[in-house]
Image (cartoon, rainbow, N blue to C red; front, side, top):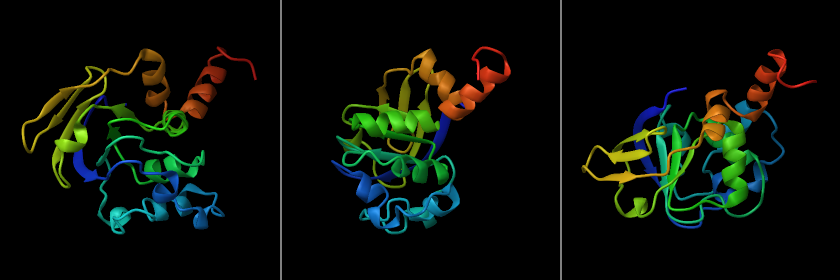
Amino acid sequence: MKTLRTGHAHVFGQNIDTDQIYPARFIEYTEEADIKKYAMAGSDDPDFVRETQPGDFIVAGTNFGCGSSREHAAITLKGNQVGAIVAESFARIFFRNAINLGLPVITCPHVHAHVQPGDQLQLDLKAGEFKNLTNGWTAPVEPLDDYIMNILSHGGIKPLMRAMTSQGKVRE
């Protein structure tokens, strides 16, 4: 897993809920290939799926991922190969869903005020450093602990459990 990531910013506001990330009207879809088509379909960025490149970042204010506990919200962002979500705070269930799926979520105070759409960003997951390469703003972020880094390095909790089972570290 790459601990140093770079990408462009897609900026959203405060209280972005799971219905903005993945609207309930698409909940019938269960496969990632279908789910990823509707990322941020309820937000004010209808072109998100078309414009997002692998490794791009989502930057938001407080309470990102609030609302229902639907896992689809994290699945759709991972399916679009979002490199990380950096927000001032996260709803706890979304945070855990994202980690379990292998999608890095990083809390960074005041980030929303220092990043504009399209800015080039860099995040060092291990060192805990976030940089806006466009305007020079740098902020320390809490480095992810080894437990979470291990989940992310395997691509999520399910792949981690499969790897541990195949190594005899967990019984089936």
